[in-house]
Length: 191
Image 1 (cartoon, rainbow, N blue to C red):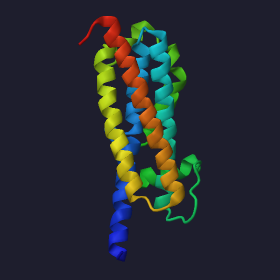
Image 2: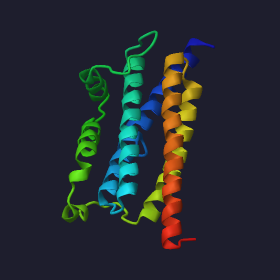
Image 3: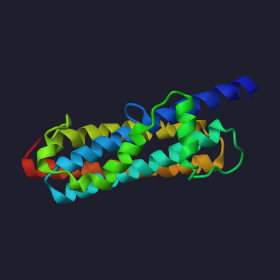
């Protein structure tokens, strides 16, 4: 493989990682959306499961962040899953990428249970579980595909293993959400 092709693959991998980290359908924005819907959901078991999935999405985002730092710094060997937070912030800031959503998602995860009913009406997210669960299944499918692309582009064994772990979590999330949707469908008589 030529050097220019390797460089192109690295750039493509970096861009896909960044998109999966915080792009429109990335881990951080989806975690935030899941937390908002969990906070508004009145059914305790569904709220608990959606909140747990959101927290795991934040863990996936942390893995992606570690890989981004590893690649940007052109490090060799196993990557650290816990790079210093300031290193990630500097990397993203140097590329004019706002990192506020990372902090917001973490804070929201810790406080989701404390959101009061009166505050819930302020969020522009679908409240109907049938509607948002169907969207989440589609989102999980796209994220699973994104992880497949990342795995295909990654060369380092430790990075591939981390991406496979994150992809597996996505597959579990999809199954959990499909089960929740089936319960809602059964309970409410949707067809």
